[in-house]
Image (cartoon, rainbow, N blue to C red; front, side, top):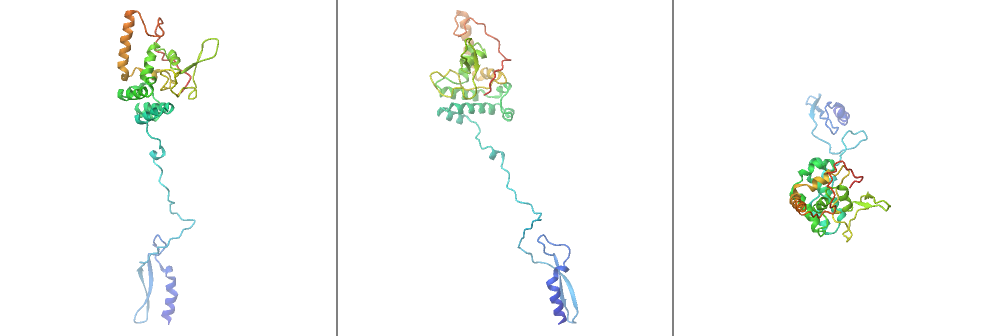
Amino acid sequence: MANASLQSFLLPQHHSFASTGGSHDGSPSALLKLSTNTGGSISFRLHPNTSRSVTTTSTTNSSAPTPVAPAASAAEEDSSPAPSLDHLGRHLVAGDYRQADETTRALIIDLAGESARRRGYVFFSEVQFISAEDLRAIDELWKEHSNGKFGYSVQRRLWEKSQRDFTRFFIRVGWMKKLDTEVEQYNYRAFPDEFIWEMKDDTPEGHLPLTNALRGTQLLGNIFTHPAFQEDNQEDEAAAEESATTGQSKDDNKGRERPKFMKDFKPNYSF
């Protein structure tokens, strides 16, 4: 009877005899169990605790880390498609010249190299990294879907006819507008509302694509003199030699001396 009473007292409180090393779920790693021998004496033995509770509880002071959703990758955050000739062609086929101009600008940045991509715009010195094949492909798409009215080679031809004078070239392609004043004056068009995004009869030849000249005209000049248009340059040089021999010129500025390349000319617009 004494043994039974002692067992009923000890067993419900076996946790008070547990070793100090416990498991992560709060259960003791070992238990002291009561046993009796044939002589009626009482002894205790240490037994490993093989039972583990599968019930979990949460407390306000729990130090367990809170699950965090994985961060979205850069590719997932930037879902906009990379510029391509295919995208450019689709915009031009649809007659969406505004979007085609944006795609062209993105293509030039992408083709100019990693530094231009990180920066978001192209230095004139990086035009040389654009392959002649890629630049010709862009130009051909513009000419094909504008009946030969738009494109870099079209602009280059008009630039040559303007004796490489960028002010006259800007007026010719409609990037500058004439002011309603007594004295003939021109001002730069505001981007994007004042530019012409439709193919009309009065749309100036060479009006598109646009090229940012905020940092000067060297970028545009390097595009026009790119090896992609070398054959066109040779044709213009041959025509110039013929004009010098015959005394006739197809240039609209006949009789005027060709100005030097205006490196310090900085238009007051950005596009």
